[in-house]
Length: 216
Image (cartoon, rainbow, N blue to C red; front, side, top):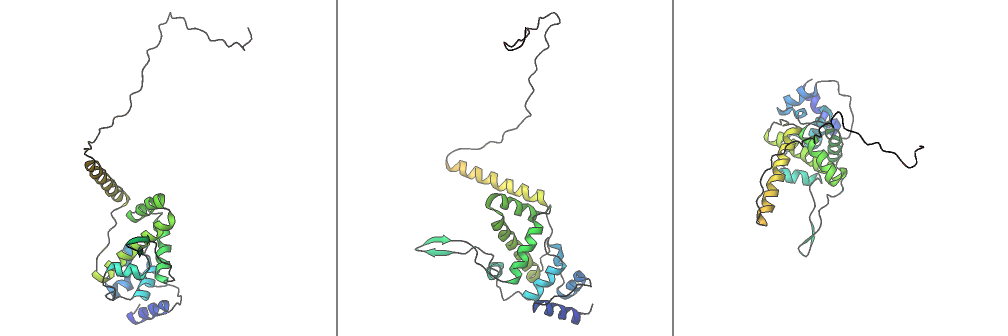
């Protein structure tokens, strides 16, 4: 597919149109921006075109990933009064990019990836709605860093994420214990031993149990 035709496809989608994808999107996007955005879990060929059509290939108008996620209304708010934070909820938005990123997050949550593990752990702790927002923000940051800085994404896997999460929890526990003057020591856990009762001797009399309700 020629670059001119591909640009027309992007312009059509960016204007709210739809089109049946009948060409190699990965190859065409790579020719256009020099990146394979589909390496980011959750961002498939169709969403890649959507993101490029809505945001373009020059993301310098957003100085940082924080500005980009703020534009998408995926960053926590900071409603303050008298120095106190009254609310940190994300604002409502009709941004089409945000809508598509949220939809992609639901599919990512079912995968055995680092992003999937992140979504599932948050969903269990704070609920699915907030987990969707947080994971969509991660997808937006990965997209921003890839397009603006050419950063390639390599999924470390769900196990790697779980190990990092465990290390963070243990580090926080050590810090909390030190604040109260305690020191944590690792404990080696062994499987519980099964109790062993020797069998009775062969000539031992085994008492019979008779219920008072049993017929004599």
